[in-house]
Image (cartoon, rainbow, N blue to C red; front, top):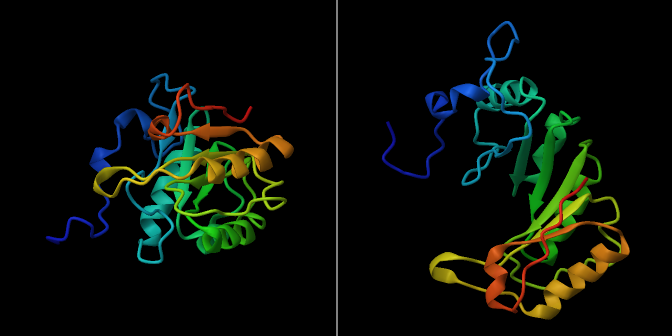
Length: 192
């Protein structure tokens, strides 16, 4: 037992029973069609330190629930290729906070096969100069930094991403925490 609350742990008992499939591959008869599930929303599924067996078990659940959408987001894009091609119900994304992370995300997402590929600019901590680099993406998320280190990106950083997305017909989803920057509802578009 580790006392470090950030040490990776796997709790199969915490996965809601309705998302598990039997060993025979049959569902449990509970209607979960259309659910969106954010996998490891406060963790890192694709880290080198994560046991492969945990990853295999998570993908077993994903494959057994084809009517659900599973959002996968990583700061370790170099490891995505190990799991490509992804099941069609996986939306595969990379976190980008600055221009250096942008180049790494693009290079790695370009070689991954997934039905929906996206970048999450959250928290957006610097200009990322996206012109012409995101044409193969299916979705972009933009957000500020919450918590004790609150940071809201300048409007021009957001607008340069939105302009590049608009030129490439990429839907933009702005997080609610951007409301403090400007009035009005944030753009919250989704891929079709």
